[in-house]
Image (tube, rainbow, N blue to C red; front, side, top):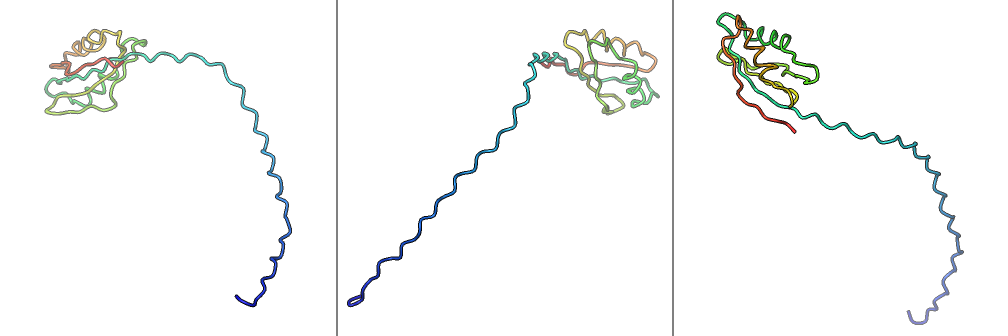
Length: 130
């Protein structure tokens, strides 16, 4: 670069930066609804049972009849499985019922009284669900 002259750089005109846009006004928060205390979860019991129909009685038909007949007290909210399992001619099914209910009295004894259609029945499992 000997003998060459360097020209002063051409000044760049200053450009003003536009101001940042104003943030949009946030929509007003909806009025908070007064909090109501959540109802405590009802404690339930899960019970699995086996029911052996009398010879000649259709197991699936008997289960349908059990679901329709054994309804318990409304406050115990008895809920049967939608479907049952039939194995070796025996019905295997479960239900839930309020923990305070005497499920033996509310369910098992009622099934026992169906003696024309039920040869045997027993609880295979039960647990409290808290």
